[in-house]
Image (cartoon, rainbow, N blue to C red):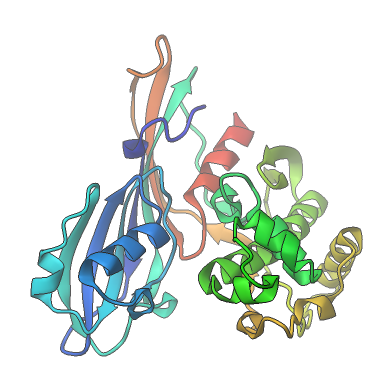
Length: 328
C-alpha cells in the first residue's frame, strides 16, 4: 500500500464552527499544496507585511497533500488579502470576526485519500482507531520529540542542534527566539510518550494485536471490540492520573525514558508552562466509505482505491491508513 505518491492523493478539509460578522480579524480559507501550515502562513504574513504573530490557525496540515483550513489575520483587509499571490497557495476571503481562529472553533477534518499499489480491494470498514499522533508530529527526520526530550533534560545545546537552531550567545536565549518551534518540539515529546502509553494500553486490551513501525517507534493495532475508551493525559509537571491503569503504564514509560514528571517544569523556558491536556485513547471514524477501485496509473499492474471519512479534531487520517494496513 502506497500513500501520498502525489499531493492530490491526500485531500484534507477542515470542519469548523466559524461564523462571521464584524471585527479586526480577517478570515480566509487557505488552500495549499506542498506547503506545511507554519511555512505557508509565515509566507503569507510576509506578503501582507504583518507580524507572523497576528496570524492564527487551528491545526498544522500536511505538506505533501492538498489541504483547506481557516486562517485569521489581525488588522488586515479583504483588499490586502486579495492581492496576495504565492505559488501553490490560494487565499479566499471569508469575512471578519472579533475572535481569532483557534482550536475551539475546530470540529474535525474530512479526508479523501487515494491508496495506491494495491493487490486487492479494501473491504474492511473502520469505526474506531487508536488515537495515535502520527509521523507528521515528529518531523521529517523524526527529531522533534528528541529535541523535546533534550529540553526536558535541560540539554539545551543538544536541543538547538536537533532543531537546527544556530546558537548566537547561549542556547536558552537562542531557543527563546524560536518560540513556535520550541513549543512544537516540547509537545512532540509529550505526544511520543502518549503514543508509547497508548500502545501498551492497546496491547493489553485489544485482540489480534499487530505492531506497526513508524518514524518514532512502534504503534500497536488490533480488534478493539469492547475496549474502554478513556481520556489519557499528555504528561506535564502537574499531571494527575484519573485512571490507575494509565498511571502505572505511564510510570513504566517514564521510567524507561529516565524522566520524571517534575522534569517537565522547565523554569528557564517559561513559554512551556501550559495547561495539562488530555486526549481520548480512541477516535471515531465517521462517514467512512470506500469509493473508486481501479487501475493505478502510477504503479503498473497494481490497483488504487479512494476512501473518504471524517475524524474529530486532532486525529490523524494517516492512522486510519495504518489501521487498514494492519487488517490486510
